Length: 409
Image 1 (tube, one colour):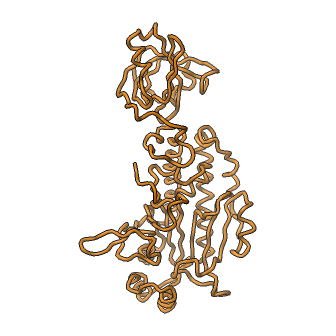
Image 2 (cartoon, rainbow, N blue to C red; image 1 turned 45 degrees about the vertical axis):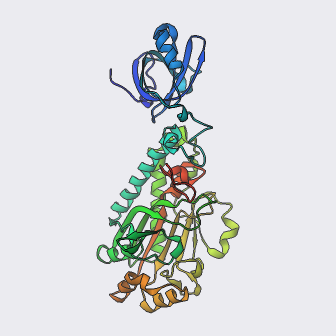
Image 3 (cartoon, rainbow, N blue to C red; image 1 turned 90 degrees about the vertical axis):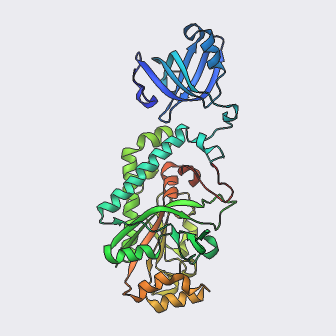
C-alpha cells in the first residue's frame, strides 16, 4: 500500500490508508487509544483498540511519547465528532522512532512568539501552513518582478564597510581585515542598475540595532528592487502593484490555508486594491492607528533617512522617501526612496552625520563615474507575511527566527 498524506484522505471514508507522521497527542479510555497524528499537511485522529492491535502492541503504543515518528495503517471512517469529520480505525501501527521524554510538548507551540523548540513547532499545522504560504509569496514576488523586466542580481552578504548604520551592523573578522554582514543591497544594486536598468536582490539582511526586548529580528529576508531613472512616484507605484498582486494571488492560491488553518479573514487582503491611500508624514500620526488597507506615508524627515536619499525640493528638511504600512502595524513592511546621485550632496550628507567618508567609497565612486537618478525600495518578507497570514509576530513567518536573545535552534 502506498502511503498518503493526511490532507489527501478527506472524502476517503471506507478506504484503507497508510499514514506516516508524528504523534501530537494521545489519550486512552479502557481498551481504546486515541492517537493524534500529524504529518505537516494536516492532523487526524487515529483510534486503536487492544483487540485489534494485540495486547503487546497496544501497550507499547500507549506509552509512546509525543513527537514519536510512527506509521499507521487503517480504515478511514466518517465521524462528525472527530476533527475534520474523519478518523482512522487502526489495524496496524509501526514505531519508526520513539521520541525521548524531553520531546514532550509544553503549552501550545506554533502560535505567538516562537519558542526554543522551534524545530518541533514547525511540525504544527499552523507553522506548516505559514511555510507553504511563505514559499508561495516568494514565488509571486519573483514572478511579478521578472514579468516587469527586473533582473535578479544579488548583492554580496559580506561588505567591506559598516555603512551609515555603524554599530547596527554585525562585524566579523576577514583574513586579518574587517568585514560586515549586509544590512541591505545599497550601492551594489545601483551598480547593477547602471547596466541592467531594472534589478532586484532577494536575500538575507542583518541588523544588530534595536533588537532585544522588542523581539526584532536580527536576520530577515529582504526584496530590494532598484530602477534606473525612476522617480519617487514610479517606485511607489511599483511597490503598490507588487503588494496588490501578492495579495491577489494569495486569495486565489492560498485561500484554503489562510481560512482553514490560519483562520485568517481574507476580506482584509481583498481590500489591497490600487490605489493605496497616500498621506504625508505630518498627517501620519492621526491615521496610522485606524486604517483597513495598506497605507503610504511619504516625504519623511530627511534626518530619519539614509544620507543617500534625495531631499524634497519643496522642503530640504523632508526627503523623497516613503514607507508602506500594513493595517494594524506601526512598523513599515516596505521602505523606499528616490536616491541622490550628486557627489557634493552625498559628501556633505556624510560629513553632517559624522560618518567616515572612506566607508562609502563605492557610493561616491558611482556618483563620480556618471551618477544617474534611480529609486528603489526594501520589502521585508517577514513583515509582509505577518500581514498576509494575520500572524501576531513577524518571527512566526520565518522558519528559524533570530533575535538578540535567541540564537538556537
